Amino acid sequence: MQAGSPRLLREMNDRAALQVLLREGPLTRSELELAIGLSKPATAQLLARLEQQRVVVKAGLRSGSRGPRAQRWAVNGGLAHVAAVDLTPHLGDFVVADVAGEVLAEHQVTLPVDRGADVVGSFGRALARVAAEAGLGLSDLDNVVIGAQGAFDPSTGLLSSAPHIPGWLGFDVPGRLSETLGIRVAIENDANLVAVQEMTDGRAVGIDDLVVVWLSEGVGGAVVAGGRLLRGTTGGGGEIDWMRVPDPALVDSGDNWPRAGARFGDLVGSVGIVRLAAAHGIAAATGWDAVALARGAGAEAFLDDLARRVAAGLASLVAVADPRLILLCGDTALAGGAELAERVTERLHELTLPRTPVDLASVRGNAVRAGALQSALATARAEVFGVDPPSLLAPNQEERS
Image (cartoon, rainbow, N blue to C red; front, side, top):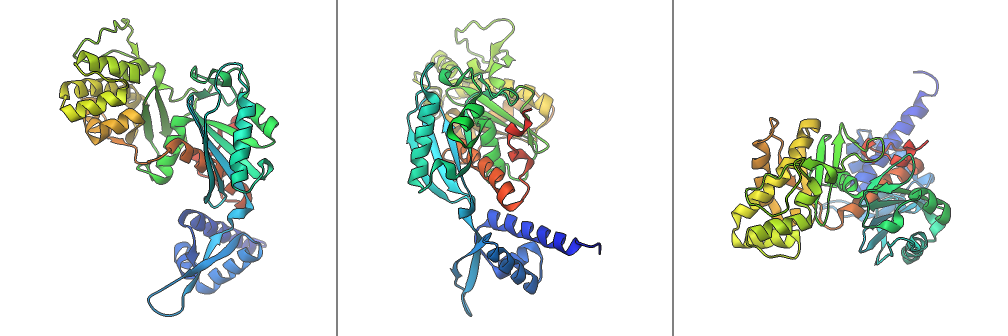
């Protein structure tokens, strides 16, 4: 072997062990030995070395059916801490976790989003509060990732396609926050973060070509090609809200769409769905209420028309990206359930050559915040442990010049 190769081999084994512990949680020596393929003595030496470096710590005993209870080992979560936020017009949903992924504190608060409001100051105070609940100060946070409804331009730091949060427009969002708070702050599109979470711990694990479609009050999307998020030059990749799509519904909703077609967001956003439901004799306040009522009443004609609209937009994505899977998420998709996904699949296959399946996103709870946390953890772990983050989780701020 070349000089220095034993050290390199040790470093590779250490990184492999840390990746397993970060993914699986606390393990015994024998479990870790099996996972990374080392001998018993080599694994014991590895754990002793990492414990001496304070990278791993003892994490209690695991009882067995026979013999002595085995010592478990875990990554030292106290080496770094991160925060993640889902920023919406109605609520800021904050979480703080250690680098091992253990959630230490959560906090939800209404934040001002109007133009001229002190959005940065309000955000900083909310972040300081949740950090304090975790027993930390702002300076103890390694990085913060924010999920927001809009397109983020990595070259300028500007948000666009976000009229619902006007106070956050017109300035370098991560730059201003990072300077004011003294912490590295990254911002990412909310649908992109749902894709991150689904590929990390959801229905899309092991899938490198994926489209996520967000159907709720508004419409959003994320495209993953070859394991990487397609963000585009100005951060507009996946902003399917603005696609022009002819209305294929069989009933006239009275919208008088232009000859060039309607915006996809107008067709399948909440307001558009409510109008379509009204044309079918269903009165509802929101799109997801309309879908839930239609399912309960067996209103198949309305559900088919909605599926036609959704499929008309998906057909363009399939033609360009040819994904292995399409996942529907958001309030409307949740209300429609597997039945809506099946109807969309049928209508999509009438329009496209690839037989791309359409399914529901599987992650429950706040998938945007969960994806933001995965991204923040990936950055911190790369720095603290030297493990390479998946390309999907590479922070887009690194692209800025």
